[in-house]
Each structure stands twice: as C-alpha cells, then as structure tokens.
Image 1 (cartoon, rainbow, N blue to C red):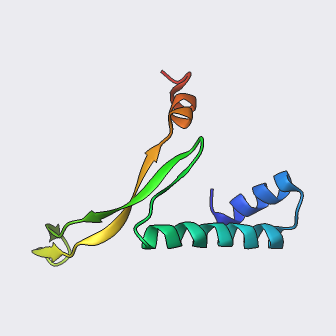
Image 2: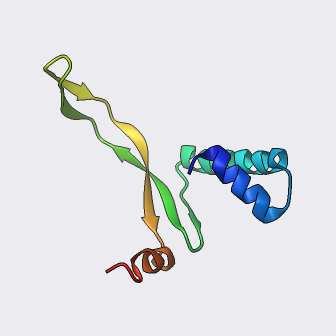
Length: 94
C-alpha cells in the first residue's frame, strides 16, 4: 500500500476529504520524524514501538566497482512490533 492508497482508505473510513486526510497524514509523519531525529522513541498502541539506533561504520563489497568500501555510521529506525499485532499476524497461519 502506498501513500495515495493509504490516504484514500483513511479518507473513506473517516468520511473527510482526501486533502484534509493528506494534511493529517503529513502532519503525523512529520511529528514522528521529529521525535526520531531528536533521539526520542515512541510507541503506537496495538502497532509497536519505534526508536532510533546508531549503525556503526562497516566494510562492504561494491559489486559494480569490484572493491571493498567503508560505509559510514548512520542513524536508522528500529521497529519492535506489539504483541497484539504479532498475535494477529501469526494467529491462524501456522
């Protein structure tokens, strides 16, 4: 599901215009991004928690140039799913 499909679905469920839904979506994403940029984690009930993590620099092989290269350390987002979503995803599959 991409952004436009998400906005269309939310718009239908909330009975508001797609323009208003897109504004709410963009505001929500910018708030969450700001928290992560400030090294603050957050959780969304029944979905999971997000928190920033520093990935240290490491060596990797670049197949195009056929050389080893050093990738710099960077900040990445780590997601931990809630038990509610884990149970729903794995409920009847196995």
